Each structure stands twice: as structure tokens, then as C-alpha cells.
Image (cartoon, rainbow, N blue to C red):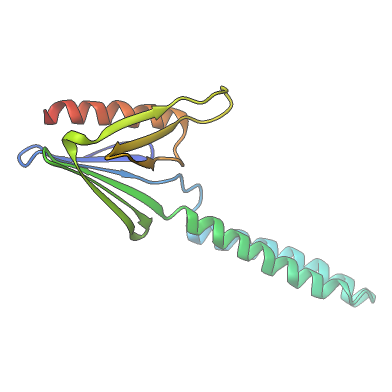
Length: 165
């Protein structure tokens, strides 16, 4: 097992089984995000309470609303970092699983009929897209990866496919 940034590759040479796990970058842990929300809440609450004591009582409900809004936004952003994609390759099969914490979507193809397609962007500012195609169906993979990570993923997929032939 070895790691390439947000790409984890596990191999079982004996059974010719390769598993590639793709995960987005998690810049902060859940505990760190809770500390951030607490810091914002204390600051906003203290300012709102100060204005309430001075006589501006309308500030306090908006301060509470701001705390709820920031907490909700942080929660939804953190939930997206638990997304993952698992690509399993054997000499016969290729399986793609996508989901948050557990597979929500699963695609399974004959490996010999599956192809890795890299769609180059029309403009350098836009990201490249990686698809696995089989039987006229396109499954995008690694949309959350950086350009360098996508290049690394494509290179590793090509090496694994070559070793399975």
C-alpha cells in the first residue's frame, strides 16, 4: 500500500487485485471545524451581547442567525470531504464505487472493454476530466482531484492496466 496525495493504491500481487481509493482533501478535522465554529460563535455572541447591553436589542437575533448560518455551511462543506471513489481492478473486472462513507453508486464492467479517457480542457483555466467508458457509458472519476493528482491517477491506471495484460 502506498499513497500519492489524495490517491491511495493497494495491490495484491498474488491475486492480481488492485484497489484505488480517491478522496478529496480534508484541510481540517471535524474537531478543528467545531473549534472554528465555537470561535466564531463566541466572537459573534459577545459582540451581539455587547450591543444588547448598550440598548441595540435587534442585533442579538441576527448574531444568533449568523452563528446558525455559519455552522450549517461548515457542516455541509465538511460532509463533502467524506466523499470517496473506489476503483477495483482485476484481470477480468473493473468496479467503480462512489459514495459518502459507503457506496451509493456502483458500476461494474469487463476490464477488457473498459477504457480510461482524459478529456482535455478547451481553455487552460478549466480542469481536465477523467472518465472510464464501457458499453457507451461514461463514468467520471476524480473530479475533486487537482490537475497534478489527475495526471498521477491516469499514469497509475495505465501502469496497473499494463500489468494486468
